Image (tube, rainbow over all chains, first blue to last red; front, side, top):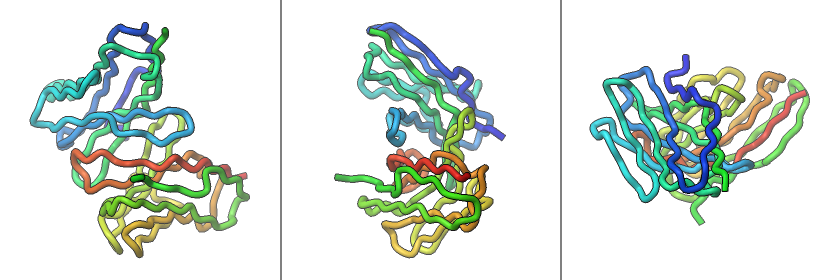
Length: 110
Length: 113
């Protein structure tokens, strides 16, 4: 039962353009949503989070948007840089655990 | 440097031979957790621990054991490994759940033949 879904396995964008990564969830009891970035041969690294009571959180080039009615969140990266090329995991937290999506591989082309 | 250290990074073993993957964190985090990553399935939680001597099952606990005798250590034990436990394993720690991001270790790639 995958409660957090990332339906796009991969995304390719040009350097300098916007990257938009999407995530859907099914459990309305989640109270925090997070994004992690993962490079090969490394563990995931926490990127940004948002509380369920907010609809937007911004940190530099990274912005997360939450649409609770649609049970959907997205991560915007502007402008995209080649160093952003990685796998991005969406996660949702509620209670004592954190559920992860399957990940989206972002490739930023120079 | 604040970090989560897992050992070993790579391990090939045979079916039924008990093994332990160690995990240690130096951030005084109360919460620790083990995940496995499989293609198309993302990260699935195996076990977690809210504090010393407090552990609980995650989504896929079958075939695994854990212990939390000290705050910094959270070993993952496979008493009788089977090929379906071939996976990439990550240990993580945090001050708590909710909006706290986890700090992950670098991973242990386990192959059971």
